[in-house]
Image 1 (cartoon, one colour):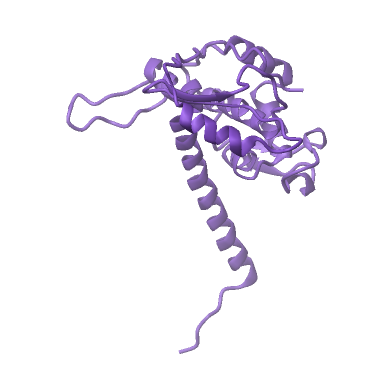
Image 2 (image 1 turned 90 degrees about the horizontal axis):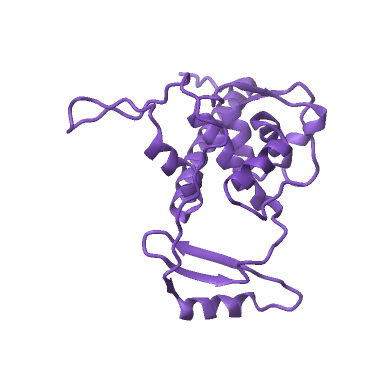
Length: 227
């Protein structure tokens, strides 16, 4: 029997489906990572704890999955800061980290906290640093907050416009104006590929630069500014 080989359009479609599947898997892993590191404490855990949009089964043994009701929109200003008690300084680990960061012409700073125990290490944690692509994390938290409250759908289509395009990392800047992708795909590109154009699209969708800076202040992120 003759083997029928897939056509080039079929191969491209398969590759596209594989990329989309990988993007969704990596987005899920990213959400888990942020939650475990304490960054996710700003978002998912607090929202799930306080959300009233939860449907539970009457059977305590087999509860239904959490279901978000889109009509129940959370106040945009509401996102409580978590308590992060610093109770036990890991001096040996901190000393090792300081040696690793003690490089010529390198200004380093960090604060790592284990929320459950209060153990921590810190170096110049009160000083301000250029955030670079780390600014995408609080932007991502606001995106997830709006998804959780029903203000944004993961399957809604976002349109690429000229003012979204930025240099640096990412390939989305090279796509033609008018290109449409789902909010899930754009957010995945922002976090997984650190795509700057995708980041601008998410910033635009959640409310813009001024709105985000106001949110950061509401969350008590006093030195976090999107320029």
